[in-house]
Image (cartoon, rainbow, N blue to C red):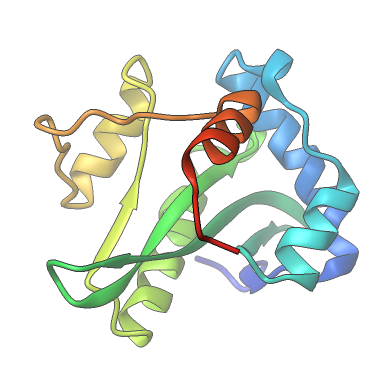
Length: 166
């Protein structure tokens, strides 16, 4: 990478920028209708409550992409891990190694923090990303199925299932 490219930790003032990049990712993944996040959500959960962290990739003086990640924990490995929620490079900056720079930056953080795993999900139709991840040594976990509860389903389960928990 040249001197005009850097990866830095995001700051609270970057919330509008991060949201703009998330919108770009949602568009790329054909999920714009699913996007509900706001700048205030990012300020609250990423910067105030520190539920996640973000990196910004700057190239030639402007924001070219981002990565957003958070810690997980593996009881089998006995160590924390990092889950990458999003890595995105704007279309006009692709093919310049910026995605690899973001990905390796998160890996560097994971190594520094003695994490046992670095994990993420990738849409099965996203062949360029799959090829990229595999070129970096990643392997799909074909024997695992991802499940999700969202919104009202979480509230219903919480209301109907938890007893004794305050």
